[in-house]
Image (cartoon, rainbow, N blue to C red; front, side, top):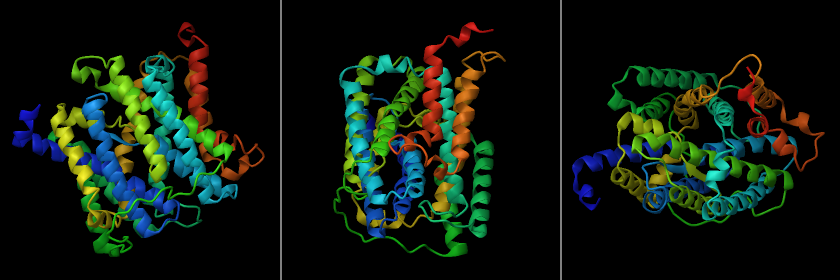
Length: 430
């Protein structure tokens, strides 16, 4: 492997990995910071730390974890749940500091459970619960949750608790940008498609600055550790329970990423790879709780990147991760990227995560649906979707300890699917 670091093509492929990691991470701390109404300095700090910790997490997975070229990043599931909880907290008059502090405790508990799953080799037992029907429901509702978030950003609506109206000019630019990225992904040569996210961010950012001017709200060019920037540890049972359930469902990302790359690597991931991968994910989840970052997981979207580029070797991935780690330690870079317009980032990721529908469809194709057993999918999907459309305050009559769970369509739908798929033999109905 050492010899491969000398090859020019390894570094070119490494730069591709760098941009893929960058495009998937840069918007996450910006949206969370904006939703929690943090200062520009704190948002810049969170962005820098997200870069550094993500690069480090990828390196640990490459050397000591599953040892495959699979990005370890801030989980889209956690991201979606955190932003959804902000809306729920607003309707229940829960201060953002209490939400952030309770999330920290929930994340620590989730980190401990994930590490335990790894150390005790529980992964193979848990994976049996996540049958194709469950994964299909999870991917569909997961995609719906994220698309809601991105659409809100494209329309110029705030990620926090404030009420607002659609910014028509911002929305128009966002939809034009999203349309151009879709056309690019469909028409561009296969080798160019892996650059779609990057090209979208650069093009959209330039267009935004030319039309609306620069958003000069960057923080100071300094790097200092700040513990619990979202709020000091606080006990709110409902939020903590929601966080723990999210952490347990987050293990699906590890199964999806490793199983999805088995064919590419010509072998099934063994128990040691699962143990090490879960343990490392758990450790970095604990780190994220300490520093107010979105917790970690292997990125299932890495599968699409590997299919498009065929960069399966670890060396380019290691190069890309190391470069990403380094830029996280350079304060001026954090200041620059903290000025990225959220509407642009949302438009780019809106297109990227539309592909989750295809992931859900592939799982649904693995089960035989008919008019008699379609309930196994219809019940969790429709209930989850309906809950997503309900105003948060309609759940105020439910006890506060379970309100954040039952008011979250993704969690409810996935839990129902887990129960249905593991308590009844649907395949026997025809």
